[in-house]
Length: 428
Image (tube, rainbow, N blue to C red; front, side, top):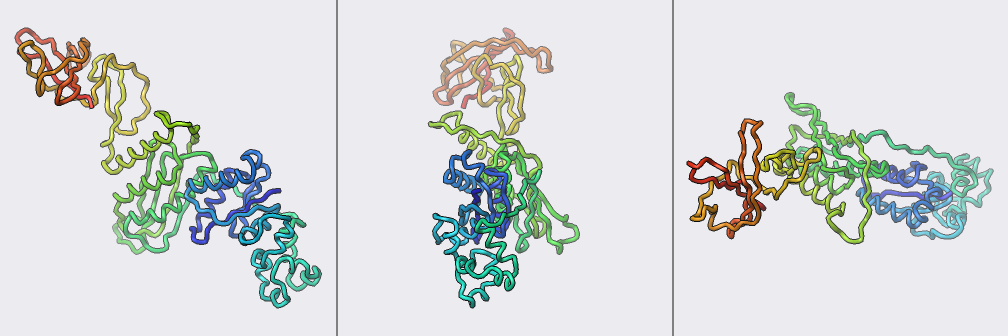
């Protein structure tokens, strides 16, 4: 068997142990808690991940992506031995197991550390010296637990572990060390829960498109204040990127006011979706998934800062009238059925209502100077089925030396009309 013991850093949050265990479950189903560490039996996974070194590198990369800081780690044929070696990273990690364990201090094994004072008076400072003591006398004085722990660490007795499993849905809570009065301060504590969420998603090879952060108000709040509050954070696509979720949550909290001091946080994700891992390309290009993710993250922050509906997305719509073939929806727009491409270029912005244009001596439109025709005409006769009436227009694309590309149409008016030219759109 091949065991890997993982310890979190001493300065890490307590919830990071759960996140570390969930992260290890993405590499092997045999993961257990052993005192302050997480142990994983990975002998069946070594070939899949390309060996022990490659597995350790992939685990480190996954921990970095989830915002987790790994502490000491060690390999051994038994879980207790791996934990003992991880507690003493300054000692040799290579060689025969018995020789490596014999050189460790008593503090490396919790069962021996509990009797450190008495064992020190007997002249024992290392596990090898403890192991050479007479076993019957050792059992009578210190109980059978010490000998059992020694035998399990050296591989002479089998170990029994309660394997960890992933919950069906993510729901974590955190009691705050003090009462928080300002919502942006909650981000520091919410990031602990976000790290657990990202590790949970990594183990499920999944992501989220929405998560909910709720807080419980202090019991000493005013009578007219509710017991708590919450906000929902939505993303444009499925993700488990910790930095992206943290930035988006920070934008929401910056615009949130707490009705009373908060004493507890709760983060939940009801819907977990499969996350499609994109293949890494040799050269970045328009189809680069990382570029698309970066654009979506920027648009998400703009939606929070500017307000819902202020960021819009253009979608093609099936219609015979050119000015009705493009509609703008709040971003991200829901999926729409496929529509035929417009017969000509569509302007970025429509001028509503259309602006009448003057004509020169040759009956050509003029707008901030003379215009040069680029394309057209494109004739339409449509719209009789709606209240707007029949459209009989010829559309053109003109270039202005000062205003750029313009979308202009000529209304086929009665002979009494003086001008039938209108500016209907501007190309960005």
